[in-house]
Length: 160
Image (cartoon, rainbow, N blue to C red; front, side):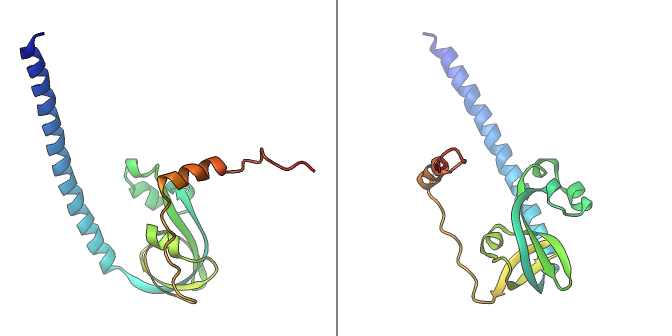
């Protein structure tokens, strides 16, 4: 066996992995800076509003009913993701808004809630009549698998 060739291959693989890790490090720093800037913009525009959530779903950006400007300004890689969309009554108007993931899970339907919004983005729940519901417990991978196989597709209907 030619050990010189094996060492060269291992060295090339090692150099490629170091280059990839360096690129990911600098890319992560760049994204972190961008996120800090966006968070400061969100904090500057936030306001407390009373809303009543009518409907909430996870939808793709194109199907969500948000203004066309939102879709046009979204990066190409983010257009395919499903977002937590909330249809809410804000004052006399019914608006479609994007919610933070935690807010989406906690926001009760058909109940008035005071929330912090920034533009079309719901960032936080301040209060809800009857108390803010707790976050649902996270499912383990085993519970997800068991739940997937226990779904009833209509194939197991009882015969009358």
